[in-house]
Amino acid sequence: MEKQVTTNRGGYLGALLNSCPDAILAIDAKGIIQFANQQACTLTERGMMELIGKSIVILYANLEEAREVNRKIYQAGGTIQDMETRVLTKSGKLIPTRCSASHLHDSEGNYIGGVGYFAQYRPWVGAEVEVRAQAKELETKLDSLVAAAAPIIKLLRSFPG
Image (cartoon, rainbow, N blue to C red; front, side, top):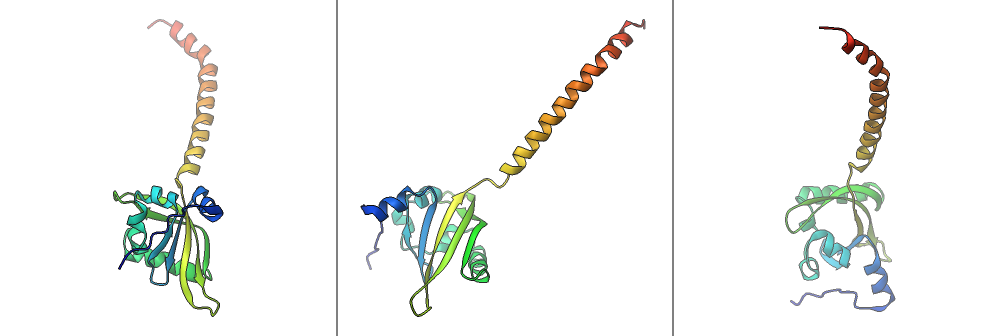
């Protein structure tokens, strides 16, 4: 059976999807990837042919993690926003991402697949900013204490022995 590859070869929709800064992946009801934009290829370190036709599970650390993400989408009523998850790259790295995703249904309400938008992020960025601000504040306090203590230190050094 020949694999159908969606490459977004042009037109407004293709340009729109490939210009999106987030990775976009769409799956069918069996969890098989049917669509991936160029950013999805970049994020996962895989070519288009390595994504299309493969199970979405290849992008998670294990089957249980993939199931947990799906459970969370169901629990949220079929749509989630900014859920923290990880994407497994071809080289084996787990990349922290924020995922917004929806289950897709046909006109009769039958589940037909899903679509996910993944943005790479560093969860510790906020903590880094806070630590830098605290370090700067402590450095300023230390400088003022050293300046205040300078006359006392000078006086102590003037005593013999």
